[in-house]
Structures are given as structure tokens and as C-alpha cells.
Figure 1 (spheres, rainbow, N blue to C red):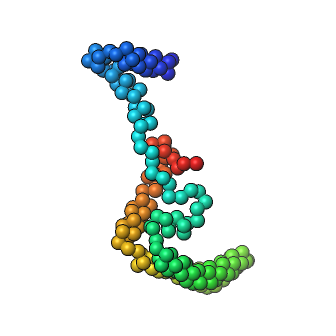
Figure 2 (cartoon, rainbow, N blue to C red):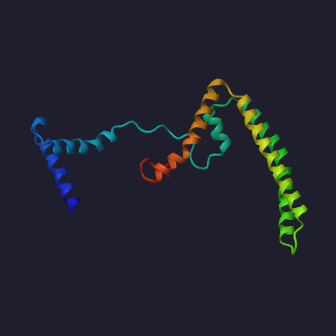
Figure 3 (cartoon, one colour):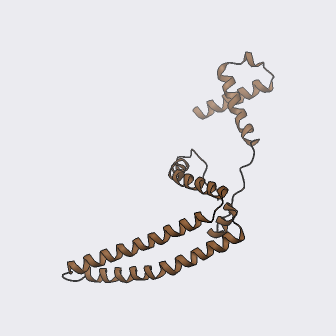
Length: 181
């Protein structure tokens, strides 16, 4: 019933506009409905959103290169940083996997040795800290090769990252359009 009433009211407002009724002769409710009926047309005339930087499936490095407009020299340096990080992190990850396997094995036994369990937990923590340091070094090296304009873009990315939970919440509540599919 309410839906039908709204539809009739909107149609009445459109008829008033089409009939050329002067704005001052319209009731406030009719004027509001006319504005509301005109809103979709105004939205359609809005400029299109800026093009996406990447389509789904674009490799992360290519996206970074596009967004920051990296030079060939910067790209080669960045690739070198990734190789250096891989050489550092991969053996650490392997050590963590081995220590976690030992820890799981020890904890699944009848009477786990507290000293061994404690040592393994501390070792795993220390290895993870080394990986964290490697990631930190990668980030510092990346920042060091950027121009001032690129650093400004990086600051914008950091700001956007802090807003991600808000964007997600707004999309869930349909207060903001979701990402294109």
C-alpha cells in the first residue's frame, strides 16, 4: 500500500512538472518529490568514475609500477630488493617450519619437556622477528628509491589503508558502492 502511494505521488509530481505548473503553485511535498524524481537524471549526467588502475588478476608488482609510475631503474632496484628479501626470509621460514614441527611433536607426547617447549617457542619468536626486520628493511629500501611525488602517493596509500575498515563497513551497509565485479 505504501509503495503504491509513493508511486502515485511521484507520478503526480511528474505530471505537475510536465503540465508546466509554476514552481510557486506546487506544494512543498510536490516540490520535494520533483527534486527526488530529477535526482536519478542528475546522477546519470555525473562524470564517470576514474579508470581502475588494474583489473582483477594483474600482478601486484605491475600495479605498483603503474600506480607509482616507477622508472626502469626503480623497477630493477625493487626487483633486487625482493630477491634479497627472498634470500633472507626463505631459510627463516624453513627454520620456523622445522621448529614448529618439533614443537608439535613435543607437545603431542605423554610428558612434554617444559625446557624444550620454552626454547622452541622462543626460537620461533626470534625467527619471526628476523622476518619482520627483513620486511622493514624492504619497506625502507622502497621508500629510499622514491621521488618526493612518489612518496606523497605512498602517504596517500598509507592513509587509504587506515580507511579500509570504514570503507568495508560502509559497503556492507550499502552506504558506499562495492568494488566492480
